[in-house]
Length: 239
Image (tube, rainbow, N blue to C red; front, side, top):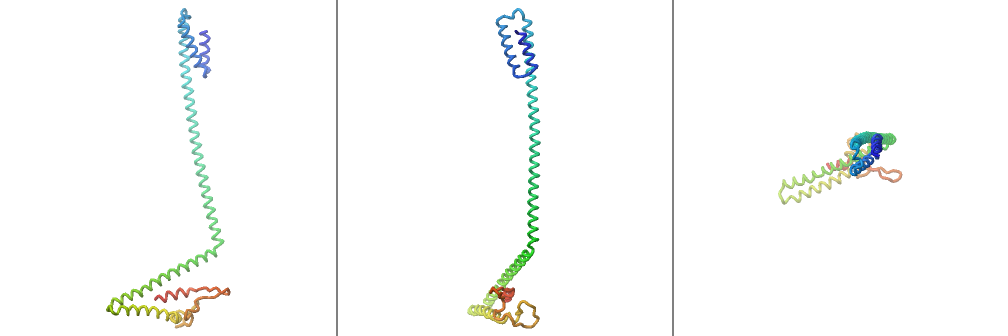
């Protein structure tokens, strides 16, 4: 029975598997029981040989476990390398796809902008002209307002150069100066200096746009369209 068990253990060690350990444990239990009962007292040599085979089978089993563990570790390491390479490849493909999508979006937007500007060059030119006109108007209005502050400066200068009892008279003269000057400029000052309408006139004096007339044009629909002469009138009046 012991020889049969030993041969079974050895064959299990050669084949490998989970049964090897159970066979070794069973054989050890049987051998221990036989030695304790004295059933093999007459054959100590066979028992010693059987124990030696058991130890050899146990050593082979340990070697077998180490080899299997090393193989599993190798497989796991290879699997980790493959997964890392796949992750890098996926990340690279995502970056390439994102760059291509951004390039398509920018290219599409550029084409749309070029097509829009090409197809609407007339409206763009009109918009630029309107913006330039509005900028000129704002600048001249601001400059005219700053020039009018010179009147306040002259009032303070004249008030400081006279006696205190004459300050009120000086301020009144500055106010009347502005009022009378404005009325004269509105009535015939602009006409004599710049009353040429929207055309060219090289005469010494002109006779158009007197008393604030002729600064607007009326269309057939009854819409009043102002001209740039109104802005020029304001700026020259400030002086």
